[in-house]
Length: 279
Image (cartoon, one colour):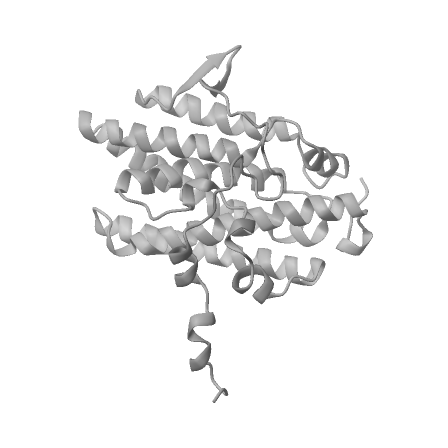
């Protein structure tokens, strides 16, 4: 298999597709890290607070690795990546656009949005693009801890009573649909380019199917309705996402974007006056 030691060895279509994918992963991890951190002091149990804090640190650590790669390989400065970009260019999973209103929302993004990240990161292991392959095993290993936390809390909420279970199902259905929108259609040009180059180790369709089959089996085990259906031993959304207007750069079907107040808390520009060495 041909390997690539730097982005300079990629063709223009390969460069564009990989840069867009890494940016979408980074944007999603940025907001996952924010939401996990925000809930550090709002969880229903002390051990959940510890887990939320730990997962937030993991996500920001992953973000730093992705931003470093985008900077060194694609010439995107930290200011470009976070401070200067318009909100309508962010390519995060849409379920992270707003504040999480309940613990059910937190558990849903932990299970479903973070779960989709794990499926995609696994497809980048042993990537032909060495700068990504070098840190991907570390990311996937840490993601497994996130999923154990998500599965544990999903089990707890599913068994906590009818009202709690219904809240989890409502959050899960909304988050799963937004996550599937972010994953995009089963076949699209950018994904095909990355698969052909060996940058992804499996087809985009298989990435999605692995994720949905895992979620479908887990939902059945717990008697949860995430609005999925099983066909020929595989799971799909009961109502498929219409990808007619899907934008491969923002990974969205509509002109949505993160709330400005979320990025306000994440951007350092508001504190620039306090930086050491400045007047």
